[in-house]
Amino acid sequence: MKLLVCISKTPDTTTKIAFNGDNTEINTEGVQYIMNPYDEWYALVRALELKEATGGSVTIINVGSAANDAVIRKGLAIGADEAVRVDKEGSSSLDVAQQIAGYAQDQGFDIVFFGKETIDYNGSEVGAMVAELLDMPFISYASKLEMDGGAGTITRDIEGGTETVEVSTPFALSAAKGLAEQRIPNMRGIMMAKRKPLNVVAPVETEALTSVVTYELPAEKSAVKLVDPENMEELVRLLSEEAKVL
Amino acid sequence: MVLVFAESVNGTFKKPAFEAVTYGYQTAQALGTSCEAIVLGTADNAAALGTYGAAKVHHVADASLDKLDSQVYAAVIAEAVEQLGAKVVVMTHTSTGKSLLGRLAARLKAGSVPGVNSVPTVDGGTFAVKKPVFSGKAYATVAIHSDIKLISVMGNSMQPAEVGSAAEVAALGVAVPASRTVVKEVSRMEGVTPLPEAELVVSAGRGMKGPENWGIIEELAEVLGATTACSRPVSDVGWRPHHEHVGQTGIAIRPNLYIAAGISGAIQHLAGVNSSKTIVVINKDPEAPFFKAADYGVVGDLFDVVPRLTEAIRKHKG
Image 1: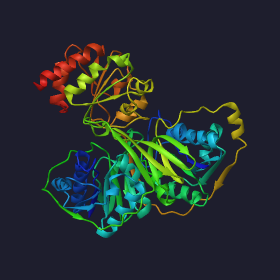
Image 2 (image 1 turned 135 degrees about the vertical axis):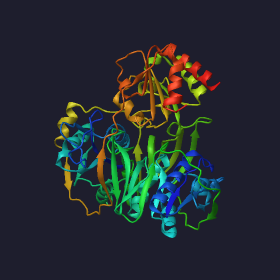
Image 3 (image 1 turned 90 degrees about the vertical axis):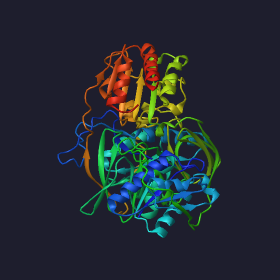
Image 4 (image 1 turned 180 degrees about the vertical axis):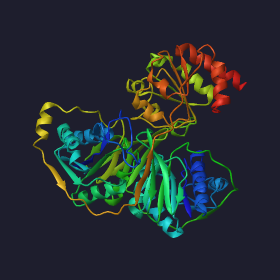
């Protein structure tokens, strides 16, 4: 099977978020970037498992500048066969989706994998957009995927439960916890990744339909109010009268 | 016109749908236009959406729409948007909304903002709406420039507000394409408010020492009418089911009250709960990082504190 995994670069989970002077851009100083965890731990690893079981190839694709190459090489070190980078800083989710679809449309991929969301924009949009642009079914929040030839059975997380869906290739899915177990690249993988192809392709033309006007930080949380562990009546009073949540 | 796609659970509209209509109604008020709703498949109490501000409910009754296929839903809603001339489409940021919003954006070539928690503003002709980003560590205000604008609303962003009476429900003639997916099974917890919708959540972590000790957490949740949750380590070792896990790799929630017992408050956990309106942390370690994110803290042994809190709430409720 021919598998495509879409990977995003995000600030590390523990990053302290700050913005530039006019609050229109994140201050990148000192920010550590990583591969978006859901893309890396679940989407990429499940694609590799399928390839190992049935053959085929795993391509990873990223939309961004050369600054993303380190993250892309990590994907190759974990085991992807080749990488594609569309040479553009995506201006929005739809822009990124159009770039991915622009590359993927005539490549004949059987399954296109995404993470359930990125940990920076928390949108959960790009997978659905690419699926629409490629005319594929899309299953979000997949926590289990079994393939039997071209027939897939997917368990997806829904509110307070799960849903089991059958779908045939080609299709797209977004990966949630449970789909696979994180893999750490080994030295051989890291060495091999240097020789694997990373093809840089030109972006397609798109129109910006959304733009960030401003970023802001949440209001500073006031200091925690400590309550005597012997006096839970006082906590109940505070929750009822002050916080008004009881 | 603002068109709200209202989701039902097995044909019944509940609080999340009413919240979405309330959001759509307030958005329509801000834009000086009307709010209508669209419902798909079985819809038993669709007229109730009028109570929350839908002037009219459009119903596409085809039974195949009882099961989600995001591709089919997107085609149906896109055609409805064109037929009805809707300028803003509102839906909820649920498992369904997350499958659908992006598809609709790509199909309609419309700008979308997912997971918002406040009503849009129109300033000098610019339509903008605020959403949390960086897992709740910041907010972005995003402008939408396209003619049609798409928004999905986070659960618990607003209380449903009654502003009207039952709405007219009218059949809408839209072609329903054949589905390429088959939903084989849907399993939901019965009798429990799902975590993303819960207003009150009681959560516990490794400090519980073992799954056999969870009785005190369940009792507190029961007295409160809360849903139970847990931290990642606890679901990873199988003390609690996977669907209870809140945090970055689990579910992100924003209840009115989040009580955390025996959870240290790692940044990955906070990413899933830091939008909660009020946070109570119970931990015997005064240095637990969770206290920095808490509104109220109790430094003490949870095995003493939790039953005492349960008792105090029971007394409070009379």
